[in-house]
Image (cartoon, rainbow, N blue to C red; front, side, top):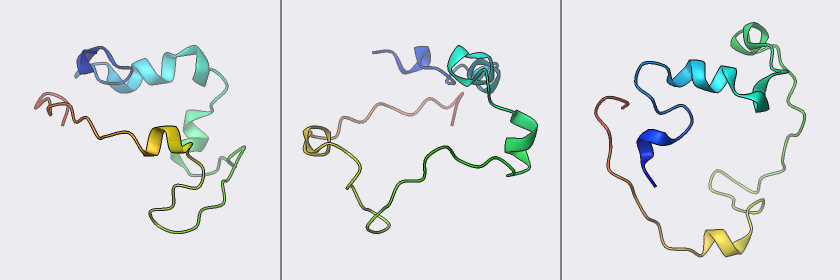
Length: 73
């Protein structure tokens, strides 16, 4: 997969692409910026690196890093 095609990874429009995505249509971005949004779900975690909320099918997979894009980073 091309990292440049991922949602939010276009250098000029990345954040606007996220804000405009239908999944986030009900997000009040002004309230979010002011940290006034109550999360709909707050998971319990066992620690800083707790993986309790992730299926072991995914946590046991090898890590595949994609190269950094200097336009995005």
